[in-house]
Amino acid sequence: MDLDVDHLGIPDTDYKCIIRMPSAQLQRICRDLSQIGDSVVISVAKDGVSFSSNGDLGTGNVKLCQSANADKPEESVSIEMHEPVCMTYSLHYFNIFTKAAPLSSQVVLSLTENVPAVVEFEIEDLGYIRYYLAPKIEDDAD
Image 1 (cartoon, helix red, strand yellow):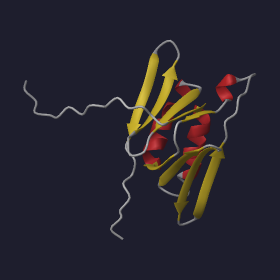
Image 2 (tube, helix red, strand yellow; image 1 turned 120 degrees about the vertical axis):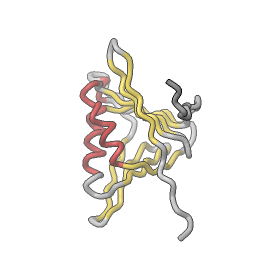
Image 3 (spheres, helix red, strand yellow; image 1 turned 135 degrees about the vertical axis):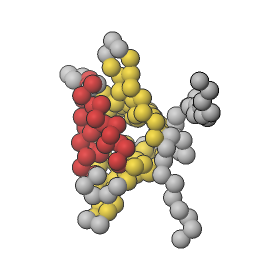
Image 4 (tube, helix red, strand yellow; image 1 turned 120 degrees about the horizontal axis):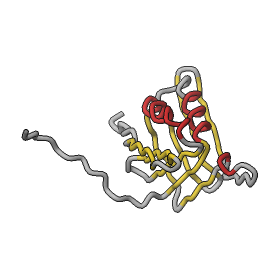
């Protein structure tokens, strides 16, 4: 069988921001923000990571700061930032991705400007699930 299809490769990328957080928390944030709008703006700066959405009903914003919980490390939030990042993504796909949250206590978000985001769930003793999502392209034609 000869199939004429293009292979879509994923280039190796050095991500500028890596966020490790509880997977249930990301799932809740995406679910709540999807009630407001259909896109999420993820902004990473020195003071933390911000998830925001705009819609007809108003604006929603959730800000997470780096935290270390020694008693329960799976509930900690860690942010490794080499440079600030601010990108817009589809909440529809983030909500699909976070359905994997019960498989892992933590999720790792890897972000860089104008590069697909990586949403990674590490599954103990089995491996991982990685989702790649391209950022939304803003129309500058207005």
